[in-house]
Each structure stands twice: as C-alpha cells, then as structure tokens.
Length: 383
Image (cartoon, rainbow, N blue to C red; front, side, top):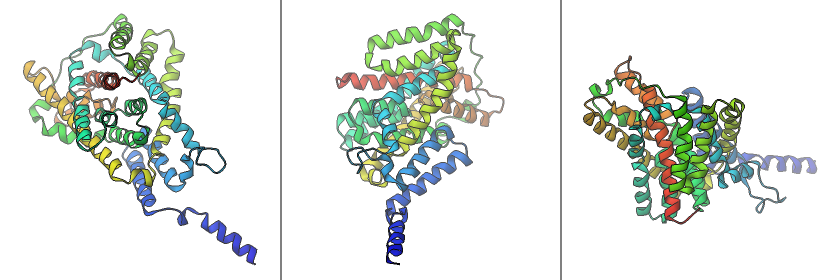
C-alpha cells in the first residue's frame, strides 16, 4: 500500500496543477483569448492561432523551450529548436520569400506615389526608437523594439537577432505579430479620427495596366538599387524580390507554388509556435516586457496616423484624387492593412473599391520597414 500511495503521490505532483504559478494561469487565459479572436472573429488566424497555441504550450509545460544546457538529459525542448531558426534569421527571410511569391507588386508599379505613403507610415518606427531610449533601453535594443512600429514580425525578429538582442527577441516578436493580427481593431478608429467622411468616400481612378516586362524588371531593379545602397537589407529585400520574380517570370510555376503555399505555411507553423512559446510567465510578465508591448502599440498607432495624415496631404495636393485611407496601409502588414483600408472606405460608400490602390502603399511599407532595419544595422556597423 505504501508503494501505491507513493506512486500516486508522485503522479499527482507531476501534474501541471502543482507546478504552475499565477502568472502561468494569466498567460493561459491570454492564449485562450487570442485563440478566441483568431477562431471566432477571424483575426489573422494563420498568425494568431500558432502564436496563441505556442503561448499555451509553454505555460503548461515550460520544458518545451528549455535549452540543452539547462535540460537534465542534455536535450533541449522541441520549440527551442524551432526558436533557434528565428534567432538565426532563417525563418524571417523565408517568410519574405513567401510574401514576395504571393503578392502582386503591380499596384505599386502602377502608382509610384505609393512609395511616399509607405515611407510616411515608417514614422512610427522612429517614434518607438526615441521612446525606447527615453525608457532606458540601450540604442540597439531601442532599434530592435522600434521595428514593431512597422507591424512587421519577420523584420522585427531579423533585426533583433542581427543586433544581438535575443534577450528581448521574444517580446518584440510577440508584440509585432500581435499588432499585425489586430490591425482590424487598432487601425479603423485612427483612420476615422483623421479623415472626414467625405474624404473617405473619394473614389480613385482605375490603375493603369502594368506590363509583364515591368513586373519582371521591378524585383531585379529594386534588389540592385536597395542592395547597393544598403547591403544589409539583402537577406530580406532579396528574398522578397526573389519570390516576386518567381511569380512574375512565369517560368518557375512550381517554385512559386512551393514558396507561396507549402513552404510559407511550414514556416508560419514553426515561427508562430516558437514565437508564442517565448511568452512564459517568467519572461513575459515583467516591467521591461510590458514596456516593449506598450511602446510597440504606440509606435504602430503613430505609424498608422502618419500614413493617414500624409494621405490627407496628398489628397489636398492632388485636389481630391487620392483617398487618404490608403495611407494607413503603409505599414507592413500585408495584405491585412490594405483590407482594412478597403473595409473602412466601403463603410463610407459601399461602391468604393480601394483594395488595389491600398496594396501599393502596403507593399511599399514592407520594403520601407526592411530598409529601416538595414539603416539601423548600417548605423551600428552590423552586417
């Protein structure tokens, strides 16, 4: 009987109920809330579902992220090895390959002024940078945090790893991906606040057709120009443009399909779950991490506002030919931000179709955020 009692006691004390802290329960509740948003309301479920489930796993079983050095048997946890691919900047680069292969750059080529809207929306990045400096973060940490303002998860991970900020890579990635997923909640109030209803009803003229030659030359030219000026952006911009060249060349359909579908989804699973698994209660529920999350939100809001305000200016300069709502799409959340521009515009006028016009600033925002990351790397002498 003593043996049975001891065995049952050991089994009982091995359950998570005896090992979890109150913080773990808080993070489990947050994970369930994210799953609810992803599944019930459809807030970017491809991103939010694996992130939320990774969050759930690590707070039930923290050993799933243990390093080999800390493991009793010398073997690391499953998601630790996924996370190494984040630290090595492999997964962010592959994400850019998939984004390029699945995105039509035609709206940006057709309307080059979109580059200006994409650039304006990067204002949030520099807002977050100086805000992080004021909060006491060192310059490299501030730069890594600031990229959250572009709502670009892969670039946030890439820059944090390149600048050696792996200690805060997890919170940065979670904040960036969370705000990417919550674009439909965060952006509309800002867009409506900074525009009049009559402005939101503006209908833009149809974009000019873009030739196949233009679409093929664009990724090649962008890679050469941006790469020559900021070589540090090549892993991101180069992969983005390679994926787009696959798409537009028309001669490597198998590579296009793989990059935009199978490979992309595999990478999303690995990246999403490993990013979510960085949110253990011990790592996430502290002042520094919460400060990063707040800074990221402020930066994202400023970036959205800057894009809309610049859209307002372009509307005035073009005498009403630009709908300022497309400026909010200048953040890097592709194609979520463009869809939000379309949705808010359709609320003002159901016959208004802004999606393709908004895709121009949206694609420009992806390039702009990568350029901002490369600029920080160049400033700090990191290659």
